[in-house]
Image 1 (tube, helix red, strand yellow):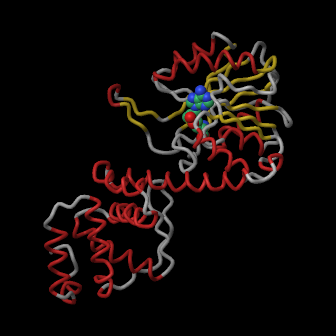
Image 2 (image 1 turned 180 degrees about the vertical axis):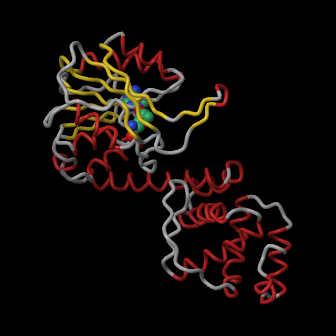
Image 3 (image 1 turned 135 degrees about the horizontal axis):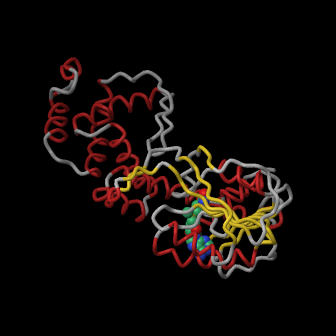
Length: 354
Ligand SMILES: C[S@@+](CC[C@H](N)C(=O)[O-])C[C@H]1O[C@@H](n2cnc3c(N)ncnc32)[C@H](O)[C@@H]1O
Protein backbone atom coordinates (compact mmCIF):
# COMPACT_ATOMS: atom_id res chain seq x y z
CA UNK A 1 0.00 0.00 0.00
CA UNK A 2 2.52 2.58 -1.23
CA UNK A 3 0.11 5.47 -1.23
CA UNK A 4 -0.62 5.48 2.52
CA UNK A 5 1.78 7.04 5.04
CA UNK A 6 3.96 4.36 6.66
CA UNK A 7 3.51 5.77 10.16
CA UNK A 8 -0.24 5.28 9.79
CA UNK A 9 0.17 1.78 8.38
CA UNK A 10 2.33 0.80 11.32
CA UNK A 11 -0.41 1.82 13.77
CA UNK A 12 -3.20 -0.15 12.08
CA UNK A 13 -4.33 -3.53 13.37
CA UNK A 14 -3.84 -6.38 10.90
CA UNK A 15 -7.59 -6.78 10.33
CA UNK A 16 -7.90 -3.16 9.23
CA UNK A 17 -4.85 -3.36 6.97
CA UNK A 18 -6.34 -6.42 5.30
CA UNK A 19 -9.65 -4.63 4.94
CA UNK A 20 -7.92 -1.71 3.22
CA UNK A 21 -5.67 -3.88 1.07
CA UNK A 22 -8.05 -6.68 0.17
CA UNK A 23 -11.42 -5.00 0.09
CA UNK A 24 -10.53 -1.58 -1.15
CA UNK A 25 -7.34 -1.61 -3.18
CA UNK A 26 -7.59 -4.88 -5.01
CA UNK A 27 -11.25 -5.01 -5.92
CA UNK A 28 -12.92 -2.89 -8.54
CA UNK A 29 -15.82 -1.60 -6.45
CA UNK A 30 -18.92 0.12 -7.82
CA UNK A 31 -19.79 3.53 -6.32
CA UNK A 32 -22.48 2.01 -4.08
CA UNK A 33 -20.04 -0.66 -2.86
CA UNK A 34 -17.47 2.08 -2.20
CA UNK A 35 -20.02 3.91 -0.07
CA UNK A 36 -20.83 0.72 1.88
CA UNK A 37 -17.13 0.00 2.41
CA UNK A 38 -16.61 3.58 3.58
CA UNK A 39 -19.39 3.31 6.17
CA UNK A 40 -17.94 0.02 7.45
CA UNK A 41 -14.31 1.08 7.65
CA UNK A 42 -14.40 4.79 8.44
CA UNK A 43 -15.42 4.63 12.14
CA UNK A 44 -12.64 2.17 12.94
CA UNK A 45 -9.97 3.82 10.81
CA UNK A 46 -10.81 7.17 12.38
CA UNK A 47 -9.31 5.99 15.68
CA UNK A 48 -5.86 6.07 14.03
CA UNK A 49 -6.19 9.34 12.12
CA UNK A 50 -5.93 12.91 13.38
CA UNK A 51 -8.56 15.48 12.35
CA UNK A 52 -7.30 17.96 9.73
CA UNK A 53 -7.06 21.73 10.15
CA UNK A 54 -10.17 23.87 9.54
CA UNK A 55 -10.69 24.60 5.85
CA UNK A 56 -12.54 27.17 3.83
CA UNK A 57 -15.79 26.52 2.05
CA UNK A 58 -15.42 25.62 -1.61
CA UNK A 59 -17.89 27.45 -3.81
CA UNK A 60 -17.89 25.60 -7.12
CA UNK A 61 -21.38 24.55 -8.07
CA UNK A 62 -21.06 20.83 -8.31
CA UNK A 63 -18.64 20.22 -5.48
CA UNK A 64 -19.72 19.23 -2.03
CA UNK A 65 -19.04 22.29 0.14
CA UNK A 66 -16.08 21.57 2.36
CA UNK A 67 -17.30 23.35 5.47
CA UNK A 68 -15.07 21.63 7.86
CA UNK A 69 -15.50 23.82 10.88
CA UNK A 70 -16.34 21.15 13.39
CA UNK A 71 -13.82 18.59 14.58
CA UNK A 72 -16.00 15.62 13.80
CA UNK A 73 -16.42 16.68 10.17
CA UNK A 74 -12.71 17.36 9.80
CA UNK A 75 -11.94 13.99 11.31
CA UNK A 76 -14.22 12.18 8.90
CA UNK A 77 -12.80 14.22 6.03
CA UNK A 78 -9.23 13.06 6.77
CA UNK A 79 -10.26 9.45 7.16
CA UNK A 80 -12.38 9.52 4.01
CA UNK A 81 -9.44 10.88 2.03
CA UNK A 82 -7.38 7.85 3.09
CA UNK A 83 -10.17 5.48 2.09
CA UNK A 84 -10.59 7.32 -1.24
CA UNK A 85 -6.87 6.90 -1.91
CA UNK A 86 -7.13 3.16 -1.33
CA UNK A 87 -10.15 3.01 -3.62
CA UNK A 88 -8.33 4.96 -6.32
CA UNK A 89 -10.94 7.73 -6.52
CA UNK A 90 -10.86 11.39 -5.56
CA UNK A 91 -12.05 12.49 -2.12
CA UNK A 92 -15.02 14.50 -3.49
CA UNK A 93 -16.12 11.51 -5.62
CA UNK A 94 -16.22 9.26 -2.58
CA UNK A 95 -18.00 11.99 -0.55
CA UNK A 96 -20.71 12.16 -3.20
CA UNK A 97 -21.22 8.38 -3.25
CA UNK A 98 -21.46 8.38 0.56
CA UNK A 99 -23.96 11.27 0.60
CA UNK A 100 -26.19 9.47 -1.89
CA UNK A 101 -26.06 6.23 0.15
CA UNK A 102 -26.73 8.10 3.41
CA UNK A 103 -29.72 9.89 1.92
CA UNK A 104 -31.21 6.50 1.01
CA UNK A 105 -30.81 5.32 4.62
CA UNK A 106 -32.22 8.57 5.99
CA UNK A 107 -35.30 8.75 3.76
CA UNK A 108 -35.88 5.01 3.47
CA UNK A 109 -37.97 5.46 0.31
CA UNK A 110 -37.78 3.70 -3.05
CA UNK A 111 -36.91 6.92 -4.87
CA UNK A 112 -33.69 7.29 -2.88
CA UNK A 113 -32.74 3.60 -2.88
CA UNK A 114 -33.26 3.58 -6.66
CA UNK A 115 -30.85 6.49 -6.86
CA UNK A 116 -28.18 4.40 -5.12
CA UNK A 117 -28.66 1.66 -7.74
CA UNK A 118 -28.67 4.23 -10.53
CA UNK A 119 -25.42 5.68 -9.19
CA UNK A 120 -23.59 2.54 -10.34
CA UNK A 121 -24.59 3.38 -13.92
CA UNK A 122 -24.41 7.18 -13.96
CA UNK A 123 -21.57 7.74 -11.50
CA UNK A 124 -21.44 9.55 -8.14
CA UNK A 125 -21.31 13.09 -9.56
CA UNK A 126 -24.50 12.86 -11.60
CA UNK A 127 -26.23 10.89 -8.82
CA UNK A 128 -25.23 13.56 -6.30
CA UNK A 129 -26.60 16.35 -8.55
CA UNK A 130 -29.85 14.40 -8.74
CA UNK A 131 -29.87 14.02 -4.96
CA UNK A 132 -29.45 17.78 -4.48
CA UNK A 133 -32.23 18.31 -6.97
CA UNK A 134 -34.56 15.91 -5.07
CA UNK A 135 -33.81 17.67 -1.81
CA UNK A 136 -34.36 21.15 -3.23
CA UNK A 137 -37.60 20.00 -4.85
CA UNK A 138 -38.85 18.46 -1.60
CA UNK A 139 -38.05 21.63 0.29
CA UNK A 140 -39.93 23.68 -2.34
CA UNK A 141 -42.90 21.28 -2.16
CA UNK A 142 -43.15 21.61 1.61
CA UNK A 143 -42.77 25.42 1.51
CA UNK A 144 -45.41 25.49 -1.21
CA UNK A 145 -47.80 23.46 0.98
CA UNK A 146 -47.18 25.83 3.86
CA UNK A 147 -47.81 28.86 1.63
CA UNK A 148 -51.02 27.33 0.26
CA UNK A 149 -52.48 27.47 3.76
CA UNK A 150 -52.00 31.26 3.91
CA UNK A 151 -54.43 33.85 2.60
CA UNK A 152 -53.85 33.90 -1.19
CA UNK A 153 -53.57 37.69 -1.26
CA UNK A 154 -50.54 37.59 1.05
CA UNK A 155 -48.67 34.68 -0.48
CA UNK A 156 -46.76 36.62 -3.12
CA UNK A 157 -45.25 40.11 -2.98
CA UNK A 158 -47.36 42.93 -4.39
CA UNK A 159 -47.19 43.09 -8.18
CA UNK A 160 -46.29 39.40 -8.68
CA UNK A 161 -48.61 37.09 -10.62
CA UNK A 162 -47.66 33.49 -11.34
CA UNK A 163 -49.43 30.85 -13.42
CA UNK A 164 -48.82 27.13 -13.72
CA UNK A 165 -49.83 26.70 -17.36
CA UNK A 166 -48.79 26.35 -20.95
CA UNK A 167 -48.28 29.96 -22.00
CA UNK A 168 -50.28 29.30 -25.16
CA UNK A 169 -53.32 28.56 -23.05
CA UNK A 170 -52.79 30.92 -20.11
CA UNK A 171 -55.47 33.48 -19.55
CA UNK A 172 -53.66 36.66 -18.62
CA UNK A 173 -55.62 39.61 -17.32
CA UNK A 174 -53.66 42.09 -19.42
CA UNK A 175 -52.65 42.42 -23.04
CA UNK A 176 -50.56 45.54 -22.63
CA UNK A 177 -47.30 44.26 -21.26
CA UNK A 178 -44.35 46.62 -21.53
CA UNK A 179 -41.70 43.95 -21.90
CA UNK A 180 -41.41 40.19 -22.32
CA UNK A 181 -38.08 38.82 -21.12
CA UNK A 182 -37.78 35.10 -21.74
CA UNK A 183 -35.41 32.17 -21.97
CA UNK A 184 -37.20 29.45 -23.93
CA UNK A 185 -35.83 25.93 -24.47
CA UNK A 186 -33.39 26.04 -27.41
CA UNK A 187 -33.46 22.53 -28.92
CA UNK A 188 -34.73 21.68 -32.39
CA UNK A 189 -37.77 19.92 -30.93
CA UNK A 190 -38.88 23.24 -29.42
CA UNK A 191 -38.80 25.32 -32.62
CA UNK A 192 -42.61 25.28 -32.80
CA UNK A 193 -42.71 26.93 -29.39
CA UNK A 194 -40.90 29.97 -30.79
CA UNK A 195 -43.62 30.53 -33.34
CA UNK A 196 -46.20 30.42 -30.53
CA UNK A 197 -44.07 32.84 -28.55
CA UNK A 198 -43.99 35.33 -31.45
CA UNK A 199 -47.74 35.07 -31.97
CA UNK A 200 -48.61 35.50 -28.31
CA UNK A 201 -46.05 38.27 -27.80
CA UNK A 202 -47.69 40.24 -30.60
CA UNK A 203 -51.00 39.91 -28.75
CA UNK A 204 -49.69 40.56 -25.24
CA UNK A 205 -47.33 43.49 -25.84
CA UNK A 206 -48.48 47.09 -25.75
CA UNK A 207 -47.53 49.28 -28.73
CA UNK A 208 -43.74 49.77 -28.83
CA UNK A 209 -43.18 47.16 -26.09
CA UNK A 210 -40.11 44.91 -26.22
CA UNK A 211 -39.49 41.20 -26.37
CA UNK A 212 -36.02 40.06 -25.39
CA UNK A 213 -35.17 36.36 -25.61
CA UNK A 214 -32.09 34.25 -25.00
CA UNK A 215 -31.56 32.13 -28.09
CA UNK A 216 -29.43 29.05 -28.55
CA UNK A 217 -26.63 28.97 -31.16
CA UNK A 218 -27.57 26.03 -33.36
CA UNK A 219 -31.16 27.06 -34.18
CA UNK A 220 -30.83 30.77 -33.61
CA UNK A 221 -31.71 31.76 -37.16
CA UNK A 222 -34.93 29.74 -37.13
CA UNK A 223 -35.82 31.04 -33.65
CA UNK A 224 -35.32 34.68 -34.65
CA UNK A 225 -37.18 34.17 -37.92
CA UNK A 226 -40.16 32.77 -36.00
CA UNK A 227 -40.30 35.90 -33.85
CA UNK A 228 -39.74 38.18 -36.86
CA UNK A 229 -42.99 36.94 -38.38
CA UNK A 230 -44.88 38.81 -35.67
CA UNK A 231 -42.55 41.49 -34.29
CA UNK A 232 -40.07 44.10 -35.52
CA UNK A 233 -36.39 43.19 -35.33
CA UNK A 234 -34.54 45.72 -33.16
CA UNK A 235 -31.04 44.63 -32.13
CA UNK A 236 -28.82 41.60 -31.35
CA UNK A 237 -27.47 41.50 -27.79
CA UNK A 238 -25.37 39.02 -25.86
CA UNK A 239 -23.74 37.97 -22.62
CA UNK A 240 -20.19 36.72 -22.14
CA UNK A 241 -20.38 33.33 -20.40
CA UNK A 242 -19.31 33.61 -16.80
CA UNK A 243 -18.29 30.00 -16.39
CA UNK A 244 -16.48 27.50 -18.53
CA UNK A 245 -16.41 27.55 -22.32
CA UNK A 246 -18.63 24.99 -24.05
CA UNK A 247 -17.09 23.18 -27.01
CA UNK A 248 -19.18 22.28 -30.05
CA UNK A 249 -17.15 19.23 -31.15
CA UNK A 250 -18.51 18.79 -34.63
CA UNK A 251 -17.80 22.43 -35.50
CA UNK A 252 -14.60 22.89 -33.44
CA UNK A 253 -16.04 26.05 -31.92
CA UNK A 254 -15.53 27.15 -28.35
CA UNK A 255 -18.66 29.01 -27.30
CA UNK A 256 -18.07 31.96 -24.99
CA UNK A 257 -21.29 33.90 -25.25
CA UNK A 258 -25.06 33.59 -24.97
CA UNK A 259 -26.98 35.46 -27.66
CA UNK A 260 -30.08 37.50 -26.85
CA UNK A 261 -32.35 38.97 -29.49
CA UNK A 262 -34.42 42.12 -29.09
CA UNK A 263 -37.68 42.77 -30.91
CA UNK A 264 -40.40 45.37 -30.51
CA UNK A 265 -44.08 45.46 -31.27
CA UNK A 266 -44.30 48.13 -33.94
CA UNK A 267 -42.20 51.28 -33.50
CA UNK A 268 -39.99 50.78 -30.41
CA UNK A 269 -40.56 53.01 -27.41
CA UNK A 270 -37.91 55.40 -26.15
CA UNK A 271 -35.56 53.74 -23.69
CA UNK A 272 -32.36 54.45 -21.80
CA UNK A 273 -28.98 53.93 -23.47
CA UNK A 274 -27.70 50.43 -22.87
CA UNK A 275 -24.77 48.16 -23.67
CA UNK A 276 -25.67 45.37 -26.05
CA UNK A 277 -23.08 43.00 -24.58
CA UNK A 278 -22.65 42.18 -20.89
CA UNK A 279 -20.23 40.16 -18.83
CA UNK A 280 -22.48 37.48 -17.39
CA UNK A 281 -22.82 36.01 -13.94
CA UNK A 282 -23.67 32.38 -13.15
CA UNK A 283 -27.31 31.51 -12.56
CA UNK A 284 -28.31 29.64 -9.44
CA UNK A 285 -28.42 26.08 -10.77
CA UNK A 286 -29.93 24.90 -7.51
CA UNK A 287 -33.10 26.73 -8.47
CA UNK A 288 -33.31 25.32 -11.99
CA UNK A 289 -30.78 23.43 -14.12
CA UNK A 290 -31.03 26.17 -16.77
CA UNK A 291 -31.35 29.07 -14.39
CA UNK A 292 -30.02 32.39 -15.71
CA UNK A 293 -28.52 35.14 -13.62
CA UNK A 294 -30.84 37.79 -12.21
CA UNK A 295 -28.26 40.46 -13.06
CA UNK A 296 -28.73 40.03 -16.82
CA UNK A 297 -32.53 40.29 -16.67
CA UNK A 298 -32.28 43.25 -14.30
CA UNK A 299 -29.93 45.16 -16.59
CA UNK A 300 -32.08 44.92 -19.69
CA UNK A 301 -35.41 45.37 -17.87
CA UNK A 302 -34.09 48.49 -16.17
CA UNK A 303 -32.88 50.01 -19.45
CA UNK A 304 -35.96 49.14 -21.51
CA UNK A 305 -38.83 49.81 -19.08
CA UNK A 306 -39.86 52.23 -16.33
CA UNK A 307 -40.85 51.66 -12.67
CA UNK A 308 -44.46 50.48 -12.49
CA UNK A 309 -44.32 48.90 -15.98
CA UNK A 310 -45.52 45.31 -16.44
CA UNK A 311 -43.06 42.55 -17.33
CA UNK A 312 -43.92 39.04 -18.49
CA UNK A 313 -41.90 35.85 -18.67
CA UNK A 314 -44.08 33.19 -20.34
CA UNK A 315 -41.51 30.39 -19.70
CA UNK A 316 -40.19 31.51 -16.34
CA UNK A 317 -38.39 28.36 -15.09
CA UNK A 318 -37.31 29.26 -11.57
CA UNK A 319 -38.71 32.80 -11.86
CA UNK A 320 -35.52 34.78 -12.53
CA UNK A 321 -37.24 37.42 -14.69
CA UNK A 322 -40.07 37.87 -12.19
CA UNK A 323 -37.59 38.27 -9.33
CA UNK A 324 -35.56 40.82 -11.33
CA UNK A 325 -38.66 42.79 -12.35
CA UNK A 326 -40.05 42.97 -8.81
CA UNK A 327 -36.73 44.12 -7.38
CA UNK A 328 -36.77 46.97 -9.91
CA UNK A 329 -40.25 48.09 -8.87
CA UNK A 330 -41.98 46.64 -11.93
CA UNK A 331 -45.07 44.45 -11.84
CA UNK A 332 -44.18 40.99 -13.03
CA UNK A 333 -46.09 38.04 -14.48
CA UNK A 334 -44.60 34.57 -14.90
CA UNK A 335 -45.91 31.39 -16.52
CA UNK A 336 -44.39 27.93 -16.15
CA UNK A 337 -45.74 24.68 -17.56
CA UNK A 338 -43.93 22.20 -15.31
CA UNK A 339 -45.66 21.86 -11.90
CA UNK A 340 -42.48 21.09 -9.93
CA UNK A 341 -40.57 23.98 -11.49
CA UNK A 342 -43.58 26.22 -10.90
CA UNK A 343 -43.53 25.38 -7.17
CA UNK A 344 -39.84 26.26 -6.98
CA UNK A 345 -40.48 29.58 -8.70
CA UNK A 346 -43.48 30.26 -6.47
CA UNK A 347 -41.56 29.68 -3.24
CA UNK A 348 -38.62 31.74 -4.56
CA UNK A 349 -40.86 34.69 -5.42
CA UNK A 350 -42.80 34.38 -2.15
CA UNK A 351 -39.54 34.92 -0.26
CA UNK A 352 -38.77 38.22 -2.01
CA UNK A 353 -39.43 41.25 0.12
CA UNK A 354 -39.78 44.50 -1.78
C1 LIG B 1 -34.63 27.53 -20.13
S1 LIG B 1 -35.86 27.32 -18.94
C2 LIG B 1 -36.01 28.90 -18.23
C3 LIG B 1 -35.04 29.10 -17.09
C4 LIG B 1 -35.21 30.48 -16.47
N1 LIG B 1 -34.67 31.52 -17.31
C5 LIG B 1 -34.56 30.52 -15.10
O1 LIG B 1 -33.70 31.41 -14.87
O2 LIG B 1 -34.87 29.70 -14.24
C6 LIG B 1 -37.30 27.22 -19.91
C7 LIG B 1 -38.57 26.89 -19.13
O3 LIG B 1 -39.68 26.95 -20.02
C8 LIG B 1 -40.65 26.04 -19.56
N2 LIG B 1 -41.60 25.80 -20.66
C9 LIG B 1 -41.41 25.04 -21.77
N3 LIG B 1 -42.51 25.07 -22.54
C10 LIG B 1 -43.41 25.88 -21.93
C11 LIG B 1 -44.74 26.30 -22.26
N4 LIG B 1 -45.34 25.89 -23.36
N5 LIG B 1 -45.39 27.13 -21.40
C12 LIG B 1 -44.78 27.55 -20.25
N6 LIG B 1 -43.53 27.16 -19.89
C13 LIG B 1 -42.84 26.34 -20.73
C14 LIG B 1 -39.81 24.83 -19.17
O4 LIG B 1 -40.52 23.96 -18.28
C15 LIG B 1 -38.60 25.49 -18.52
O5 LIG B 1 -38.76 25.60 -17.12
